[in-house]
Image 1 (cartoon, rainbow, N blue to C red):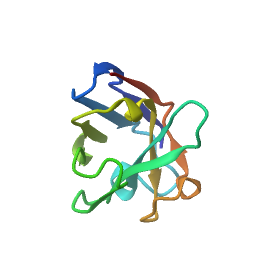
Image 2 (image 1 turned 180 degrees about the vertical axis):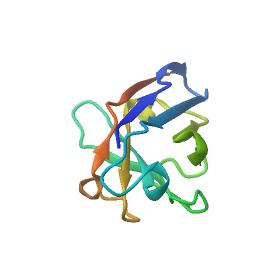
Image 3 (image 1 turned 90 degrees about the vertical axis):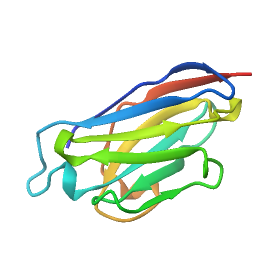
Image 4 (image 1 turned 180 degrees about the horizontal axis):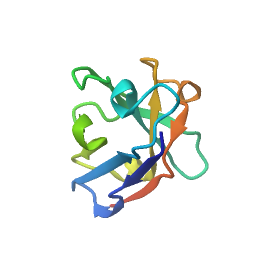
Length: 126
């Protein structure tokens, strides 16, 4: 599955953004977008990539990092091969490159995600 994240930009603290992650129609040998749990990760300059949130393949279950809980939501539309990350009440510490990724496991561990998008930059000014 090929993934492409978009929607990043510059926003003031307290503002909102919605990121999108679109999967290509190409599939792996056996799976399509709807077969994967989808995660969002982020990497700030000089820091390691960190888990943001994950949504189950059904769209029913989600899990978030404590740092974004209550501010970020994830949704998906399997008919459109698209996942979304809605970010509200953004803070300067949310500044990072945001990546989407797919996994067959329900996990927060980056190494368990096999396919990654190219990343989209979110900058939050104070």
